[in-house]
Length: 118
Image (cartoon, helix red, strand yellow):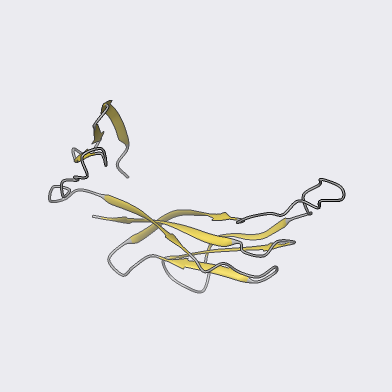
């Protein structure tokens, strides 16, 4: 996985040698041949107790993952957040290149897959 390093107000340099120009100019160069590209794939938000799955495309490999609980509403009468239990957060045992996540006590949990191509 390439690690990005800030080198000036307008430039990021990846350890793998790719050079990107920030949105300040609205430009970005294509990565050089053989460069590694990392993307995040978001699963569909899931209802409480159901599974969200995020699958990397066929030309990429799952390298890590995680979850996003979405907006967690605070009880206005107590000011406390609801009790939330993450019941699943890991690679799928049934689907290749897929990260799965589930939570009880909140609607909208999403699996996040970190995918690498190159």
